Length: 113
Length: 116
Image 1: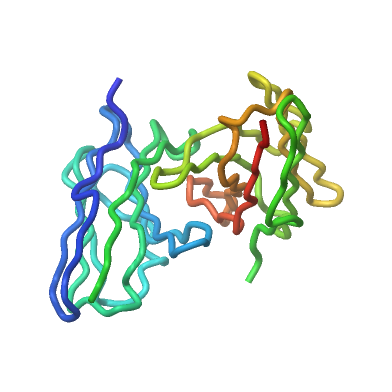
Image 2: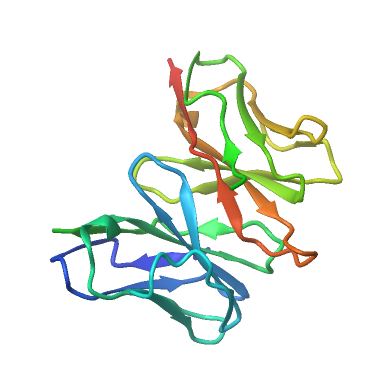
């Protein structure tokens, strides 16, 4: 069956450019999460969606980061004016409800030159 | 702040041995714990979870033990195989103010290497 799909799988861009990362959750999953994983480290929570509202944005590192979700479907994470420290793998997860196991996509590997 | 941590960053075992990966957590409000396996270039893969009203849960070749008294979590893998080689993460869900949702706090991970 279809899992969580993320695109692009890799993104290389110059410092200062804006990037948009996409997540297609598992169909029917109401909860959606974004995490960031730096090389050799664990995952850091960024934002949580329940439907198309975001009750918890506490993990977003700065106002350059934003995310939105259309209904209970696709979500986009946007990073404006990218900096080198934004280089990481950005992972999306979805779950049937907020207290069910999260299932992850394979992430977008973002490299800022 | 409070976080989930791991005692051992690496673990090497022989094929067929049993593996035990340990995890300590510090937040007594955590009520849900989950283990993930992550292979290189892939996203974390769900292995098994446990809620705080249980102290043991078994899956296929895996067992998770939860000791709330000492805030300790472990993952046991029976008859470890080379395909089990990966990074293993434990994660906790903090029940914030009575509203439980799935925000997970991850540990740093343990690298498991299984030698044929």
